[in-house]
Length: 543
Image 1 (tube, rainbow, N blue to C red):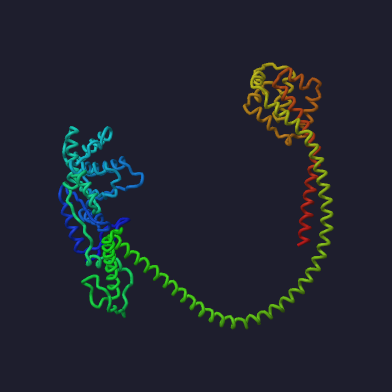
Image 2: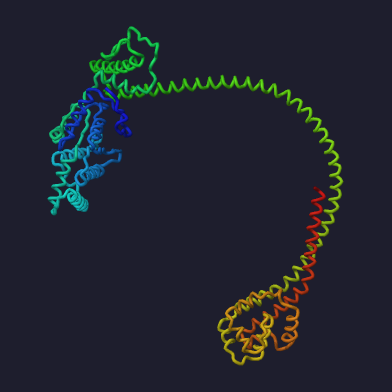
């Protein structure tokens, strides 16, 4: 016997494969059936005997794909039909060689067995493909037949070829546990399950098989002891046990002996009429796995304890060395400490002198802060006065700008269209052009200014601070001095010129206020500059 675990791909739930005589016989039987068209198998044996594992192993050897249904608590007949459709499409349309493995535990409904019985007997399940699914299937069959070089037209020919491909490529493996009544019921209700399948009976493992499996499953753990001597009363469970056995061989022999003992205990209980639990190879494998797990856990605990002890001893050794080094450095540190004390006394004396100077500077800085507070109050009062004066003028400017913004386009168009405007209209526009820096006195040039698309925008965003004293005085003497130049009269002459007249007067008034406020602003700036200087002087003195 030998393990081939590294040579074939295991999936979750599989066990490592160990080859012994019984396994090789089953492998040969299964391989012979898989090489035959319509080769189907009925494998009967206890749980853990290797029915599913060997079927998958032989399928892998022959390059066959394995398909198994995944049953859950919500698995229904519709789910089973969908799995069957998948298997039949892959084997009948795509030409895949498939092994469909189904365990009797997956038979949740009697309809499962009826469909499997029909599939085994006829190579098809009537009613499985209907409506759109049948149409799609025919299309897929036609594609598969075309790849095979066949030109089939009618649906009957296509479905006949599909059935032939299924019977040629699909192998069904049904696994069962031996039970008298259940086996008879399935035989009577599903005759094709027994007529179309080759029955292969998996019996219990021999002692040699149990011993080989035990050796293979414990090969990765360290069971060898050089000075081990087996006791004289060691029971021999496997006839081929070497004499004297090594420690590993004695352990594996004990596995076999315990498994045999469980069978004998079941036989005694059965004679007494007591309830028994069937002992299967799966229990034997679980028993070995538990032993390996417990062995590894205990070994890991011992290694961890040993590691802790070694770490503790190393810590003690390191501590002794550190104490010696600390004693040597302590003498050097004491000398340095004395030197540091002398230096600290000198620093303390210097600190006392510095503290006296700081007290003097603190008194001086207090006086500076008091003067600075008075200056700040003066700055605040003058600033509030300046802001009050400006606040009185700014609303009038804002109202005039809003009035200009609200000039209707129709009124502006009418104003532009005037060929010979009224006197007040011409007078107002000359005033506006003068404020904006336009040298326009005749109506033709004034109309050119009005035609500008940005005329209203330029008026609204006019920079009052840029208005010179010369222009301001000229406007007041030339235009504002005329008694007819009022908002009511100008607005009556033109609804577009009324807001412009109001804007011109507001801008001149605001410019007058800026001219009077400018000295105040310069004084505020001067006070702010003096404030910053005092603060910097105070900070430097405190530092």
